Length: 531
Image (cartoon, rainbow, N blue to C red; front, side, top):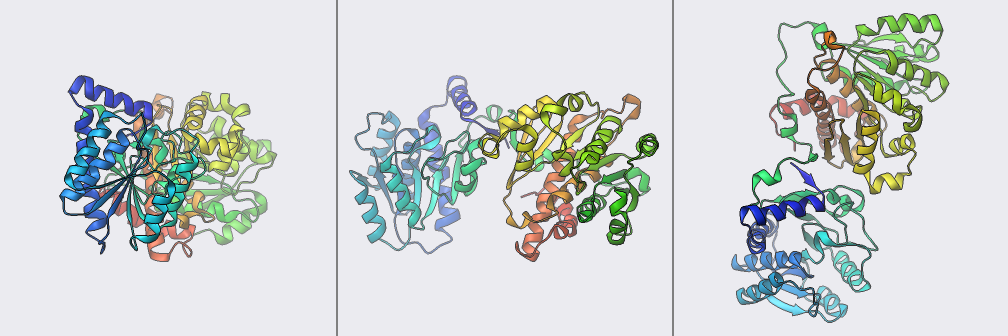
């Protein structure tokens, strides 16, 4: 599903009005009906709630949306009360005035708020629990937040209310997910038409709760396209298919994993196991001479082993043999000294196929120094940094990246002509064709050593199985399938992590648990039921 910024959403709404005959009233009415249906089915039907549904009403069409939801809830037999937070606001729209009158006619209790004591007294004295509809600020909010709203928002957050935000939690900016002093903490956010980038960035991801898209009848043609989307089954259509029962191991590719300096061979092992578990026909793990014994004593028997060459004649020999492999993963536990950088550059310069650059391999490179090499490379390159590694690679601060991850991602992809997976509770995937995918599935159980190594191995194993036509200068004939394979790897990693957390608990799960649950992930993926 497409994700938009505010400018894109405004253009969609403009076209809906000018070319399809939509009106603001029609959109608001659809929000009211669909929003009330969601709140009744998801919340009111599942809990014993005898109180009023409380609507916090600001100004503008977001306020009108909230009032329409309240009216429809009353029409379904529930009680609702609306607090008009800005009763004398000159910016009050015609639609808002209309919705206030309609809500009052249907039986919504209307209270005009003169000071914060009214809100505080209500939440402290009237009932034990609350369901709150946040229709205060909407997507047009700009920092900073007023002291008046600061006090009201703190009161609501302190009440442990079930909060449903209309379009975006109040106090959060819709494009970059920033907040000022405080923002309402939503349990659910009802995104109107399409989800917004601010739902997944910075504080927006922490305050939006479960994001649900309301279908408000906007034309399907206007909702399609764009360059940002959530990672889902549609993205992976046609990538996951049946294997040839009569194939042999060479049919499914050979993945080479380079890494594992002394004390860090576990990273190389986890990456190798990830490659094996996604179906790579052969996997070879190569490490430094100083850690070779450590690696071989711990490595699973299905993986072949080798040495990373350091002498010039050894390097020349191994370069000649690189075309034996179909993909390379370099970086897990590799180390960050000058020899590590040489090894990374040798692979990028000479390997005729896709390279997954992970962990230490990212640390020994920099955007400033290596962008020309990366951009001129004619084979696919996939980087898998977490936010800190991405910031170090680009020279930006972590705070800058967190505030504008999509902007930074697009810039780096463009400069390097490489795929980037910016890992985190919400991961951002950027591709040279301009597409950005958002993989939003927070799972604190995956914040464990080796989780990223497993992902790198998964990607290497899947890319080894992708068709490579060496007669066409080693270029992938269909780059869209390459990008889908990368998306498949991220999804498989995420779903396996979900099952690992369910079976082991988030505290007890390990990177090995993710590998063990890859079979469950592929069962889900084969049925196209990702989340």
